[in-house]
Amino acid sequence: AQNTTHMLAIDKQAGFVYTTNIRSNSLTQLSLTPLAKVQDLDTKAMPEAINISQAAKQLWYGANKDGIVTVLDLLELNQGNSEELASFENFSFPYRVLFNHAQNIALVPDFRAHKVRFFDTQQLTEIGQLDLAANAGPQGIVLHPTLDIAFLSLNLLHKVIAIDISTRRIIGEYPTGNNPDGIGYTHLSFRAD
Image (cartoon, rainbow, N blue to C red; front, side, top):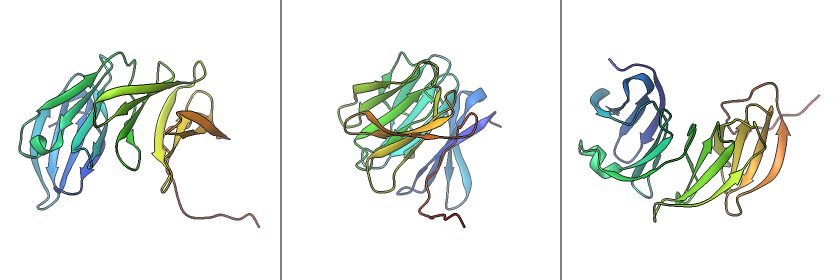
């Protein structure tokens, strides 16, 4: 059994789900049809963040112990092999991975370094970073449903910011309650009576 299974990513095209298992230092591959465990794959220490770029055919995961984000070939993974395409170091805590709509840019909030790093998924290179306020504690991140705008919770500053992905600039701030973490987006509208 795997220990501390936390995040998951869905490969809709191939019908697989991948989970990170923080304390087992592994990924688990699950089949959606039939519902079954396929395999466990070794990873770098303390994997947590995970996401899939269908466009680039890549699985990205962040390993917290040594502060590394690793990119795997999704087609190879689906065949049972874990071919590493790239790895990016010098993270303090790569908390999540998010892709823009074209899936050619990856965003990785670094919780302890208080920044967001940006990567080109085609060239597998770092293209920039956005430094946040000291002790911001960036955590949960979600993409606007139609625009390349990311909403990012700043856990230690008790707010959510909006980031224009193309310019890598903050374009809005929204106060929250204490210590926001997970974040979602809804099309529902609310009105006060």
